Length: 411
Image (cartoon, rainbow, N blue to C red; front, side):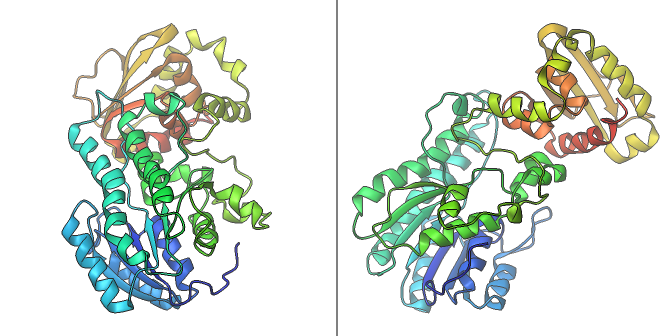
């Protein structure tokens, strides 16, 4: 863990999306120095599925030793940002640091991404970062500290990072391009950098994407908070960098990274946009599950057997705890459609279309399907790498992942 130095004492940080996750972790790290934190986020009332509000976070900041100013801010709304910046300047005398953390995600392909989602991601990620920076910059220019930190990835133009979720990639890269441009535009006045995690970070967003079981493959938000602290305590001439959390902390002398793991010793899920492609990552993790070659030569005869095995394991308890109808669209060597009804009667498995409308449609190659149900390919990894496509109720998809975990040893 990176120790606090007190360098941020009295500094004012304007952090978007600070009511939970990485933004909150950065806020609490700075608060230990005695910093002033503007908690700029949308959540004023408790969310039914996501923890934390701007007010609960403000209380935690003050308990940690900082001062807090909770402000309701949607980064798509210019007036809300301007009002919050004005309140911050009035309360604390200026703004020293801006952390553009607010972000929206939809890991869907071009056809399956509604324009409403496209607009949301572009509006929050790219436009929101640009707009918040634009409004804060006149105040940052007056600061001796003067940092902008965007939570965005290095600009990796490998097509693999575009093909499965083009809109999301464009929106995140828009944040990174702000770093590229603004670091040069304000060189000598304001340090502008990007920070990105080497591995998946356990946040509410990650849990919604991968389920609670994905936590074992993640690090805590503390690693990003420590890396952000390292950046924000550097001089203004440290600018224009695309920083990976682990690499920076190694330079700071950190050697024990198990400290940051949710489950120390468990294989970690690499994050998006880094040099190692999803195919390579998948291959590595499959190797830990028994080796890629073991399932591939037999995959062409295994889909039907897998569903037969599933049928033996389902019953009223499974139906009562799941309440979902799943349609599987299988491609590759065993192309076809199968269904798993865990909503009606005692449950049912079969080939073709279900009798009731499917709540979730899952599409993947037959070989990957067999590996997934055998526990040799993690559903979260399959989804993130594009091997598994999901339409419909994501919460039911997460329920199925939990069920798979229980079935793996029996299949």
